[in-house]
Image (cartoon, rainbow over all chains, first blue to last red; front, side):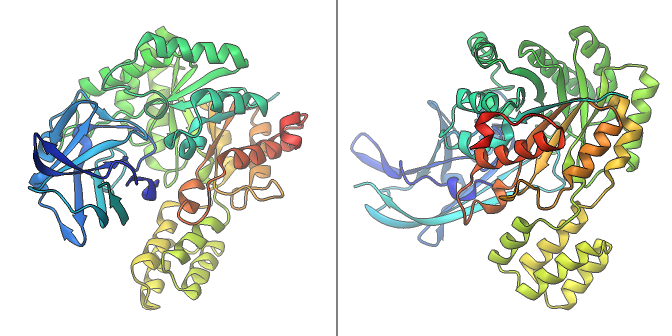
Length: 130
Length: 336
């Protein structure tokens, strides 16, 4: 559900530390009808222009805190709220070129009552702000 | 036995609008009040940001009560989740599950609810262990009997037996009308065709559903027709959905206190395409049901890839239908 709303058109940008561009970020929503504690967000897979980014370069950022995907598993005091836009930050020296990129996103999350672990996918061309 | 069937809405129905922030909580409550659906149900973790991991500030609770007062609506049910798979690779220990449900009872009480909804997979032992606490709070815990489970399934029988043995009236049931899908929903079929199911296979599965063919046979047939991916997924819906009998609710009526008015598509003629609400309401009247039918629109996820989701219009159509079936006057906001 909410598949096409997982990936936001806004907020796709490079991120910098000082004068150094260290990666890029996009905004994503959890494709679910409620919020979910972060320990149940199992994976956020990102690919850009058909190339998967390494899992260890991905972090989830919410309201001033951020976690690596492995760190999410032991976070029990925060949640990705219903409809909330989170920043998915990918470390990549130099970031991405401004302009359109094909971005694919797959989020796997553990839901207590489901007899399977769902992965929801979406993807389209979005434009990196100059 | 005299029935007292009231109309309500689960705000789950407006999930696409609240997810995208095109409707606020107040917009939802006002919409319900305008159509005379005065009972309000929520999924706590949808409506209340931060619950339960981060807690809930008193100001949010006060806002909720102010809205109830402003629009004359009544809090009915908080659907809690209990994430017993919170820890990867190990289930939440029993005592922690009980403590978690008690926190949701506290939350339900703060919201002024009469009931909290338990998901069907929760152990009867956990709920029985919370019964006394619920009684003290003046709340009931209602197990949502939801497809593919149903009132004749041994898991539900086990719950019913545990509730009787407990002697507590604080444990009961909340049937979801998605147990009574008597016709393959048109919005499902159309979605599966968009997902790539060949028309002849989609027609075959729909016909097999009308024939009430056992899902395992249908799956094998679809495989032998060359069905792959989406065709198998469409056939598998028959494993998770069925045309159970509304009258099976009658045996459980003393413990049924809330109802999910699940629906997938209200047509322009104000009829649910796949779920026989005329039959359902007749059973509820016969059983002397006293409580709310809370709309639960779930067609959204089946159409959102191709059509705008019109939650409010769909809910309005369902309430026109309910007014008709319940012999209630139709509010002005539903006449337009």
